[in-house]
Image (cartoon, rainbow, N blue to C red; front, side):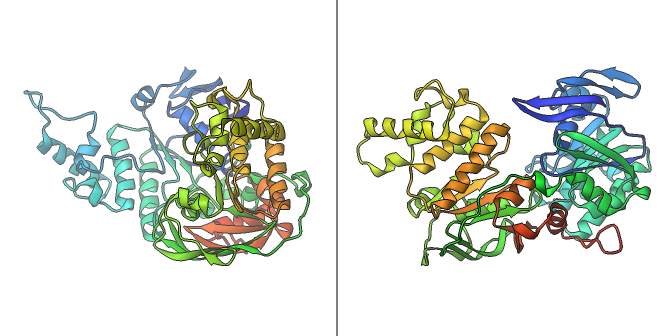
Length: 494
């Protein structure tokens, strides 16, 4: 892949990135959340088109692929989320879309089972070809995705966080399978946040940062510290500077909050005027925790106290009445009515105060919010989907500023917005803290997490492992916390 560039609106996801792969090689791709890893592999797999650049595959040059073309050319992708049909058998999933049929045009299930068994035996995979996918463990489902890719005669296998939901023994089994595949000259692109996996399985490591390629290293010639520093590459003085605020009384107390497999035994306190950041790798449970606190998920056990009193809400509606506000990561699907006017989106929560809609009042307050937040719009009647990403985010914030919330949850508050809008959102969060509001902020942006937070809660494997002081922590420290590694005397161990 040569000089690959991809932008989304005003955000550059990939900036002239080069990447290559050899037969039988495991080439690992690492970087912080948002570094551009997923975008790069989506271009190779045909899921997205680059703005410019070229792909050279088996000696032939291409501008882009469609997904079907990529598969036919031997490129298979295994994503973190399982993409199988639960109600079908193992063999039926392997042959899905490429069924074996008899002369009558009917599916020959017996022959599919026979060939599926032969293929899995050749890979030493011990899964019944007749088992339903819903009966398989996560590890067996992930293995089945590999088998399915090989059935399509894949020459390049892209694996995106394949072990994120697996245990230690399951991870080891999958990695042994990856090594076996590489020994048969299959080129493997392996994406992982678990750096110790990268050193165990990889031949080369390419580091991406902010959409750019930092460097490609041979595993034999590089150490853990070099990789983590390459992933960061920033000095603390480059971070956003915010006003520090006197921290007040405890406003929120979460104790032993639990929903098995989603959030497990999480406890923390939040004070008035405090910005408590939440950091961790993708899948650590940060957004799930916020949704559990806001009532989008129903807890199995544990308690939430607001101003010392237990609040028990099973829906977001009740959470709002209890004084919580939520600015979700996915603003289009979860935060906005994109086809409705700006006015309706801003006034939505505030209107709950009235039994009869007060149109004059809602227009007055909405105009005040537009001026206060500097929302660029043609007017109150403009559809929200016509606004920029930054102005859409401001619209959600405007809605909650009109509420009586005491705790504000910001999940990736500046994701996908331009620098100017980013600074304005940061200023608004600080302003809320100055008003004595409690702020919970999830962020994958390391400078944002460190510079905006008073304390940083570390999430790993669905639980909160520790809380650190943001003033005394560096980016490389956070990465080690996120990964649960010990870098003394080696490449790093979880």
